[in-house]
Structure formats: C-alpha cells, structure tokens
Amino acid sequence: MMNQQDEFLAVPFYQSLVSRSLMYLRTGFPVHFTGPSGVGKTSLAFYIAKQMDRPVTVIRGHHELSNKDLIGHYMGITKKEVVDNYIHSVYKKEQEVRPLWMQGQLIEAVKKGHVVIYDEFTRSRPETNNILLSLLEERVLPVYGNGKFTAIPCHPDFCMIFTSNPEEYAGTFHTQDALIDRLITIGINLCDEQSEMAIIRKKTGVNEKEAASIVQFVNRLRAYGNGSSPSLRAAIMIASIAKKASVEICPKNLLYQQLCLDVLTRHVQPFFPDEEEETVQELILQELQREDEPE
Ligand SMILES: Nc1ncnc2c1ncn2[C@@H]1O[C@H](COP(=O)(O)OP(=O)(O)OP(=O)(O)O)[C@@H](O)[C@H]1O
Image (cartoon, rainbow, N blue to C red; front, side, top):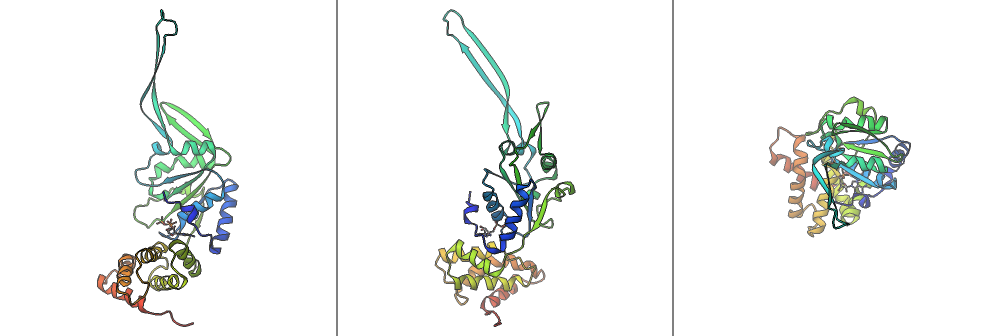
C-alpha cells in the first residue's frame, strides 16, 4: 500500500484543521472529512492518524463490505487431537471439534486502541455501518455469533476517522442520520494555489515554474465548474507523468498538450454537457495557451 502518511505535506492550509481534529479524537469523538474527489481527504486522515501515535487500521468502504468483514464470522471447523501415549500400555485420544472464528478488522482495533481510518465509508451499505452506532456512542462493539452475544468494550485510545464523497457522487449510499449525528463532519475543499504548488513539487519533483504553470492552468479550467475539478490528483498526475517521461512542461509542446487533454478532458466535459468532446478539448488547449491575466 502507498505510504500515504509519509508523503503528506503539512502545508499551513491544514494546520488548524489538523489540530482541531486531534483535539476531537483525543477527547473521544470521531471526525469525518467529506469533500470532492482528489482534494486530499484520505492523505489528511493518514497524516492525522500518524500524529495520534497509535497503531492504525484501515477499512475501505465498498458495496460488498459486511459485518462479517468488520466483526468476524464462523467458517468451517477446527479439529484438535491430543494423543496421550506417554505410558505405552495406555492409549488415550481426545478430539475437540470447534467452529473456526475468522476475526474481523474492527475487533483487534477496538480491543487494542487503534486509530481506525474508515475510508469512503458511504460506499458501504447503511446496514453494514449500523454496527458503528453503539461503538461510537456507548463505546462497546456488539458481536453476535454462534447464538451468542458479546459486547467488547473499547480501549480508551480507540478512535475513528471517516472520509467520504458527497452523497451526489455515484456509488455512495445515503448515510443514516443517527450515524452522521455521532460524527464531527468537516468539509474539505481544495487547498490554496501556493499549497497546491508546494504539494505538486514535493510529490513529483517538478520545479517552481513548472508547478505554477500546471496549477494556474488547471485553476483556469476549475473556474468553468464547481472549483474543485479537475482535482489536485489530476494536477499531480500531469506533473508526475511529465517529469518521469521527460515531457517538457510547455504549452507549445504537442506531447504536453496531448497529455493534458488525456488527463483533463474527462474532468472538464461534464461542465459542457451539450458540447462535443472536440469543442471541450479546444477550450482546454486555449486555456493552456493563455497566460494568467496580469494583476
Ligand atoms: N498535503 C498533501 N501532501 C502531499 N500529497 C497530497 C496532499 N494532499 C493530497 N495529496 C495527494 O493528492 C492526491 C489525492 O489525495 P487523496 O487520495 O487523499 O484525495 P481524496 O480526497 O481522499 O480523494 P478521493 O475522494 O478520490 O478518495 C494523492 O496523490 C495524495 O497523495
């Protein structure tokens, strides 16, 4: 897995958000970062989790995730045989057959006080997330299995960080109000231009001028839509490919133009639902060529 926490650049933009989040987590309250795709929610969650100085468990939300994955389930049987032939004249054999318990991700985290990052939790079905209601409120994990009910108490250091995309995003479920009510939900928007440039430079190794040219160009395209798309991830992608493949970051370079079109068309097209792809690409190239207006 990518080492997300080590790559995070703690730009001043995040400073207050990080310290507030740590305050909430340390006082026993879960935080939830929500916002558009690719603005840095997951990276931020990893960074904050690292500051907590506890083991980290990561759960990725998806449609098929179930309570079995979170808590555990019985599968098959385990057979244990003890053969006692210490005294040659006596042969004794004991057999024990038990159902085999596969432990889910949450149990260890709850018992040992991990920081749990539940990434994209709204991509899991609401019934899967129901288990979190008592976990977050009463700090006990209810476990039902093999006809038995057990309530596992939470370690005092156990805490959770959630991330999600807004509900209008494809593939997300509506979250039950009771769960949202238990979370401190903070909207995460794209960072400022200077921070974005610094992140791109750190992640890809492009120089200041190149980072500025990419960020200003992508920002001009963002102005046609909701301000956050094309995402920071898209800008990083352009810088990273250009750097690794030695593509000159210059608006007149045909290969760079094509790279920008390939990465950005899918992001910009939704702003112009009635336009042909060709028209959208012309606009992207126009914005690529355009120098920023002097101040
Ligand atoms: N402060 C930062 N320092 C370094 N890299 C960052 C920072 N913020 C974001 N990134 C990088 O930006 C990209 C997108 O970030 P991330 O995956 O955290 O976004 P996200 O909001 O969780 O996206 P999604 O909603 O699609 O999961 C990643 O490559 C990530 O490493």
